[in-house]
Amino acid sequence: PSFRLLFYQLKVPAAEVTVKATGKQWFWTYTYPDAKIEFDSLMKQAKDLKGDEPRLLAVDNTMVVPVNKVVRVITTGADVIHSWAVPSFGVKIDAIPGRLNETWFKAEREGMYYGQCSQLCGRDHAFMPIAVQVMNEKDYAAWLEAAKKKFATSDDAPKNAVAAVESA
Ligand SMILES: [Cu+2]
Image 1 (cartoon, helix red, strand yellow):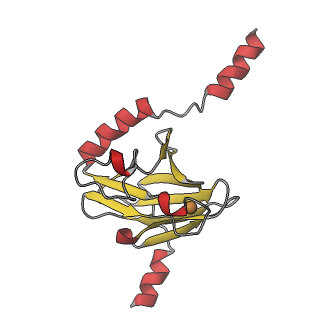
Image 2: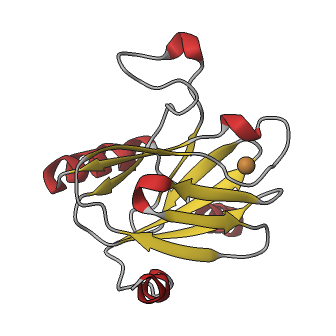
């Protein structure tokens, strides 16, 4: 049955949430194209850890997804090759500059899930963890609303800038 599973792993089902993970030296940037938000996710230093946050894995801004939804992850690299991997979801996909790779997962339980960059990428390779928080639908909706204010991308900025120049 493992051959069948390997086949289905590469068959991306209809996505309910899409997140783009861009690997950079040495952190991840997450983009939610549908919600027009984007933010950086940097490892927390040991002195900043709170409660039971794990060393080398906790980050300042976690990637957040809803439980029981198909999440499509598109990944690319901004500088060198990185790899986005979360063992609990069974996903590992290279983040290659100039290329968009995709994978998917569906988390069946709420909670925090951690992963690490899995392609040697320079000095701080060991210090660019992946943290995914799986929330129930209600909490996810609330997070999304707050994130839209906090992490709004300025998609319209170039257009507005052009309009401003033209009307001047
Ligand atoms: Cu890396």
